[in-house]
Image (tube, rainbow, N blue to C red; front, top):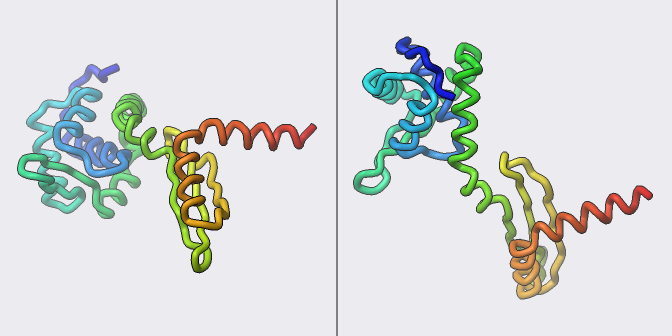
Length: 181
């Protein structure tokens, strides 16, 4: 729910922008940043733009073009330090809707990255399949490294894990729970 009182404190607006950029996984296109902040806070567009420009000028954020017309923003280490220090000054009723919007915006991207598998050399002509499963918050659920022998077998295992990670995870949990009995 949008906080109804207009936020016109330029410092608080800058903290809100820094907070928002510190919570995203990657650089954010201008339109998405605008939506994340203005859809969740009652901030005047001009005040938002002045705060954004000021943060870029003071090197708290990076502003760069990706392609011909895609302006993106990311937080710098200086901005991360300032944002961490002042996060408590942003009321929870402003932070929570921003967090929820960020989670929803990047949910599909996180799901695509939730299942990962790689092939690693063990010795000459010997390989392993390294499998990783994450949840929606990028918390590691499972990290599994399997000796496969040949590269073909490692590729088959990695592909099988990507296609059936839910079944593999469930069977591993079941195996550990059966051992308790």
